[in-house]
Structure formats: C-alpha cells, structure tokens
Length: 474
Image (tube, rainbow, N blue to C red; front, side):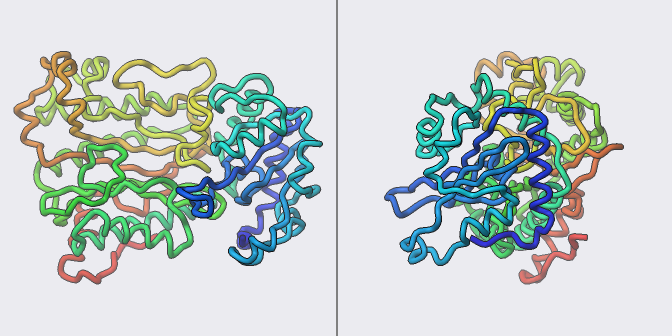
C-alpha cells in the first residue's frame, strides 16, 4: 500500500479524534478494519474497503488489521506481509512504518490481540470472516450493529457524537472528493451527445475518478430511467427526448465521499414539460439550501421540499388542492417518495451501518407515513455537519399504478394532466452542503444547476464532440 503522504496533518488529527473519543467513553475499544470477501473463488476478491469506524481513528485502509484505543492511545495489530503476498502484490510497508505514520503508540502481530481484548467494546464489521474473528477474540456474541447494547452501544453513540460534525482534515477530504466528482459530471455532460448508451456516459464519468485514483463511493446511477431510484443497469440506449439522470460520487484514498446528482437532456435541450418539472425540482433544491443553518430541524427542510413540490404540482395542474393539506396527506410522495437527503462523510450515507442511531436524534423514531418513512435524517442541524439536499420528481409505476394509492388520492391527482408529462421519468438535483456557524456552504456549487447552463454544457458538444466544458472548478 502507499501512504497518503500529501496529508501531512493526518497524525495530529487522528490523535485529536482518539482523545475526543476517550473523553466520551472510558472503556477499552477495539475496532477491526475487515477483509475483502471473495467473488467466486478464493483468489478472486472484491476490492477492499476498510470499516469506516476503523478509518476514522486509524486514517489508513489497512486490510485485516485492528486497533485498540484506550485513554487516547492507539495500539496497532497487524501482521507483517508474507513473502507470498509480496510475490503477487509487490512489496508492502513494514508495520512499524505504518504505526509511525498513523501515530500509534505500539504495534503488535494480530495474533496477540486476544491478550488485550478483555474487556473491550467494539462495533461489528460487515464481512462475515472478520465478524467471526471478533466473536472469537472477544469471547462473546455480537448482534447486528443497529442492535448493539451495553458498552458496545455506548461506543456507537460516542462515535456518532464525534462523526456527526467534521474536523478540518475531514472537510479537506470532502472538498477533494467533491471537486473530482464535479469534473466527472462535467465529463458526463460533455460526452453525452456522442454516446449511444448509458454505459458510455458512465464510463466517461468514472474515468475521471479513476484518473484521479478515486474509486466510486457507491454504485453509480447513470440512467434514462430515473424513476428507478437506485438504477444500476447501464444498457439502455440514449434517444432524443430522453433525460439522463446521473448520481455519481467519488471517494478519496482515506475514505471520504462525495454524492452529486444532475439530470440533463440527452439532446441538449429540455422539452417544455421537462423544463417545467426541472424548474420545480430546482426551486425545492434552492429553497432547502437557503433554509439551512444551525438549529434548524432537518425534518423541516424535508417538509419545505415537499411543500414546494406540492405547490408547484398544483400550479402545473397535476395535483389539486391546498399544498399544505396535500403534504399532510402525503400526496406529494406520489412523485417525491424519498427523504430530502442524508448525512455525508466517510460513508455516503454516513454511519447507516448503525441503523438510525446517527440519523435520528435520541428519542426519535421513523414515521410510518408514506411521505416521511424514508427520511434518513431527523436531527437539528449543527455547524460542521455535511448533508445532501436532493429533491426529485419521479413517475414510479409501482406507486402510480398501485390501486390502493390511486383510490386514496383520486380526488387530488389529475391523471389526464399528468399524461402531458410522460417524457419526465425522473429528475433529481443533489448537492453536498456544509452547515456553517452562520448558514451553509454548498461544497459542490461549482457544478451548475441552472437549466440554461446545464443545457449549454451538453449542447456545446454537439457541434464539436471533442470540446471540453468551459465551466471551471474554481
């Protein structure tokens, strides 16, 4: 592995995080990095991604490693690379060099971990082989991470408290992920006129990430079927009149994510119906961002988006009635079924391995309402948080063709008028936003959302397929 030597502030920042954890929990903590599962035979493995909780305190994506934290000090447990590993994967850093870089107080072979494990608390990792090792070393069963109890739950709550807001090192990484992801989206727009399939646009976008040595933070969504919220099939052809929804984000070497969505016309020009819906979604996007500041409830931001979308759909003649009443009835969720966004950090949906422990403030639970059940974040905003804002409009057959829902909302949906917008399968506009002391900063603002600018970024390539976007990343 190569160390991220350009991040000179890493050891000091990691030490501060460990001290902050020690101030919140006085139990010894062991965190495992995890391993890489095999795809279809042992030597053919999926790319490795370390546990985010391990990464937060260790800073490096070390495979098959563990750290023990106590009183702000860190012990690293990792084996020396074998000669066989060097044969196949090249030379690797010695554990002493890794320990020195991350500011570890001592380094030990992984086999010695059991001698330091009683007592200790932990968070279970995702891969089953490492989970079995955790159980063996700790000599106790571990429930799923979202159902932790006792000291393990105390640890999870302490980590949530730390990771809800970001230090300067984290923000630097999030900005880097955002900037490269912006370039990827610009490349996707520029490549669209010469592309024949979704896969070709995806390739253009991900090639920018790859060239910057960033993996994707999640499976890219690049589709003309934007009504499928997490569509990861890329074989559809691009046709004039289609909208292409691209939800693509990169991840830095130390694990920090970006998450951006833009929707643009394949032809370079929105139709009148597409323009109307795009402007409506953008109005919700802009209203929500304008309202972000410390102390504001994120649920209220979601309801602001719902109210804006409902009001716009009434104005367009798709919905009938009073917008506030329509939102109270969840009628907006027929077209905007998901939440307005989520936490962003080391995980693209930050800390969702812990269930709703991070997303929901203590004492709060998910609603069973149609219009609120998919809300991923229900907390007052704090300075230092990074959240996504991603309103959308979708015509999802499973929702709109459901007989019970059609019956429940028959009085407030003008189905005949909705047919005039048949060329709008799905539109989403998403940005990453830092909550500041006075308001907010859109970390991904360099990527335009303005309709005319989006059209220009696509259509300027029609005359010259090799033209580069003129928008800069400043």
